[in-house]
Each structure stands twice: as C-alpha cells, then as structure tokens.
Length: 171
Image 1 (cartoon, rainbow, N blue to C red):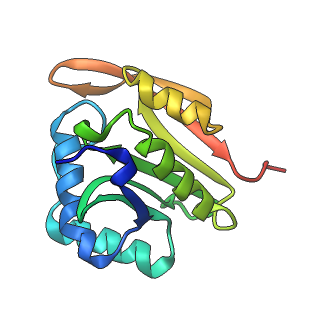
Image 2: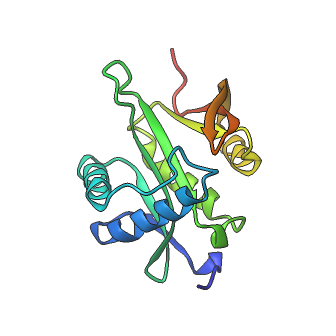
C-alpha cells in the first residue's frame, strides 16, 4: 500500500473495477461512521449498480492506486418520478488515503460529469463528519436541512445534514 495520492489516478469506473469497488465500499462501511450502510452490498448488487451507471452515463469515478480501488464518487438519479433533475451523491475514500486531496479530486470529476445531466446534486452527511462537511462546502454545497438524530449506529445518534449543490439555479 503506497497511500501516495500523487500516484492515484481518478477515472471513470469500468466493469473490471466492480470487485474492487465493492471491497472499498465494504471497508468504509465497516468503519460504521461514514456511510448509510455498515456492510458491503453483495457482488451481484454492486454489479447491477455499476452496470446501470455505465449504461445510463451516470457519473461514477474511482481513485485507482495501481489497480486497487481506494476511493469512489458517484451521482445517480433520485428514484422519484418528479425529480429527474436531481442527482444523489455517494462517495468514500479508504482510511489510508484520506486527507490527501483524493476526495476533492473525485468530487470535482463527478460534479463536472453531472453538468448537463442534473440541475442539482443532493447528499446526506453526518453531523460528526466535519471533514466531509468542509469538503462539500468547499465544493459549493449548501445545507438545506437537518434530520436531528436521523442516524443511529451501535446506540449512538448523529444528525443527518442534507446538502445541495445547484448546478443550475431553480427558476
């Protein structure tokens, strides 16, 4: 493991990345702090998600360190008929690669790819995740609301902060 951010390539996900993407999501989920999950999706669920993103051109990027997926960022449509203009952002970076600018690079790539596809991008971030909140604010996200105590893992509550980045201002 190099954990050198300058050696990491941020690029669109490919089918060959499915196992590594699943492994990365599972590792971050297992930390039980950052994601809306505490375990990985099945390989089949992961493959369906990635294949759908590739087929429909939804932004999905990975941070590739010598063939190992060490981070990801994706934006997929809100599954509501009345919100085709809204994308939902998900992202994560493996612990050894954090605080090296990979999150910023992944986020910038995904937001660039979302232009013309979505008018706004929404995300949830936890109240205890100050680093991610700062990253999102730095990328132009604004807080839209808060679900007090909306997350509970291992008996510990945390607020869920709802943030939005407008790629096109609502009229």
